[in-house]
Amino acid sequence: MEMTEQDLIGHCSVCGRVTELMELLGRKDKFCLECSADLATVILLGTEIDAATVAGRNTGALVSEFNEISSRMLDRAQSAH
Image (tube, rainbow, N blue to C red; front, side, top):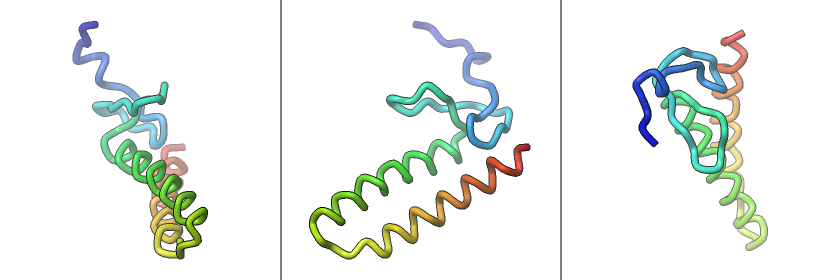
């Protein structure tokens, strides 16, 4: 399927900016580069936190990073409105 330049520009599903958009595997929404990177990181951190919890390892640093990135995404989303 051929994509045009117009298909790549639109509103980010998180921050609402009109910019070039990225798709994340398994997601219908499209995101700007910054939000897609943060969302991918949050998804990975969630998986790592779960694995560390099951293994009985300390998750403090992972949870802290998860919270920091989530807060940054929330700030961007709220500033879009």
